[in-house]
Image (cartoon, rainbow, N blue to C red; front, side):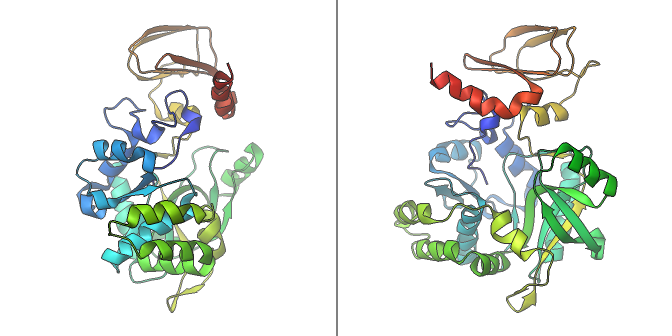
Length: 356
């Protein structure tokens, strides 16, 4: 899934070039490319699908040139993750009716790719031949308020748990309670299921979405597809896959395709971050003795400063003196200087420039 606009990473991330297409970590690969890389050779280009905005087609083609053109699905507008996933599931099933699918955002960061592949392989084995949905739950390392949580239930094979409940992003005190109680995991937004299970669940819980995708599917793999998608896709309700399917399916034994379904969670620890904010990027970067971190190009010096992150794309020489807990980010002549604990206001800050 590569259609977001990444507004919380402004000024690096902008609507015409959002964060999934940027080398935010300064490693020579964009987040989209790193996502494709981490799945390895088991997922060949013709078994890899990207759903993105029609505005980003050229960027995806440039960054993943080996991907078949049929495997780049273009949304004419944003309708959240349920219609996005339904679109790709219906297309995959026309070509591979018995496929098993891993759904992943394109803007996450994973440290241990070998462990990631091991977990994914275990998950594929678990869901194959069942109507189960498996989500990957990240073992929490701090009382994070920026992630949703999954409460694990009873254990089954290979350490996989039933899902007792999905929890919204908590307050700091509630997050502390989750860690103290144990059995709670960060919701990674990565999940695995058979494509026919995905279709059955969407038909059961989101018939309006399914009906619109059915209308589009008549013209899949034809010259009329783009025109039909542009006309019909905007009529889909805007709803996330969590609300649309995961929560109503829950950890119960809902029957799908004559088999018991339900959502399970596989606890994992492969060094994960959704890189949703500058603060989450700061957590992943190597820091000096004072907790300062840098990314991108440029010669950056910290003097009497602590817990800061500086990111520049222009190769500038920068000296940061006397700052505590700040974001300093520069891109194409736009400079952001913002307290880390105020980063939820970055979208608001970017809007102020439009009004001057």
